[in-house]
Image (cartoon, rainbow, N blue to C red):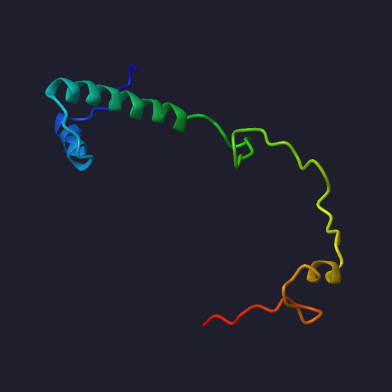
Length: 98
């Protein structure tokens, strides 16, 4: 990138220390250049006009629901309670746990 930001070798060494990474001097030079390129590209992206772009919550296209979400009573209460070891006609009766 032509408009490089400058990241010093000391900054790269500091980031490596914070990340608990061992970085050689060759790698520090490489990373300083790469980080400068990344920051320069962020400047390019910051100049893009996005005022007429609708924000996305996800970059992927999500299909709509496959069916309407309609509540339906599929079993009657007495049918469900018939399977309970103990019930009072309306609710399951379970041991009290404190």
